[in-house]
Image 1 (cartoon, rainbow, N blue to C red):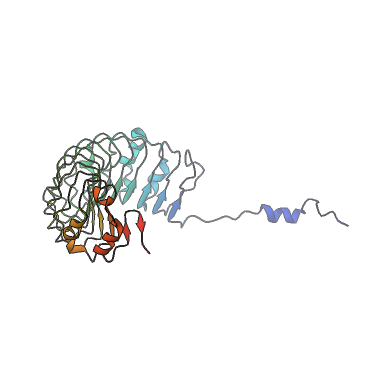
Image 2 (cartoon, rainbow, N blue to C red; image 1 turned 180 degrees about the vertical axis):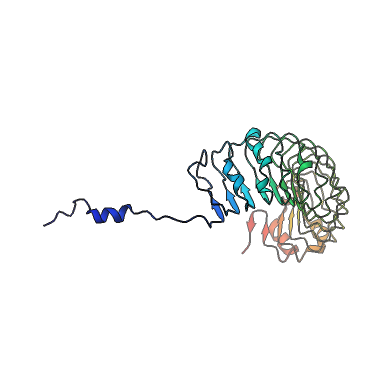
Length: 338
């Protein structure tokens, strides 16, 4: 009887070791996220690629073969080890002039790379680097719709006023002190400036913007928002604001976060009828009864309210009172109702 543990026959070996060759020549998307690659020497780059994602690798230089990917639209080097010298060759890769998204987030850049050859660029992301200045952005295409430069060391909003098509501007977690050069952004929908050193709101006359974040700055006043009539979401937590004002004309406002400020009362939002989320926690608001009148326009609409860590949150029947005021409330502080 044949031993069941004997080695496979030659025929079986052929079957076990058989490899399948895949034709990549027509592949348009290549995702190499988290492959921990130090280089691309072992990687085939199909000539028809339109998207190349190299996120979360160990790349410290650019493979020159990428310059031959003439159909490339999206290129991501997010979370690698690329520095200024390593990225420099990309400025001469004319064959990539049709690129629409360039992601260099979370690398070792200390300045804005030269992206002037990308005449159709729509998304440019250099967040989470060590960039100290926006110098060089003046060369970037005016077609850019989304610009991300958060978590750097930028001190001034400059060389951006030609970006007329901009819809999203992210400059959070920098060292900005002044809001400026925003007047040309007539298409801007979202402005993210949290974690800076801004003392005064100056939107330079913008009226179309829908989302603004100025959390964790040095604001003491809300003045400056009056003309933002399209505004839907406003985040002003962790500042030094002592009075709610300049809000009555923001008829489209759905989300208002003024938590962790110095407010003693709720004001200037009684005419708002679309408010759904209201964050007032960590202030000095005394009276629970005054809330009903202060938010009278949105009593039926409001679904979430945060008031914890205010003196009024210690009132007897705190939650029951709020549920009576707001009949459609779904969440009070961390308590979610079915």
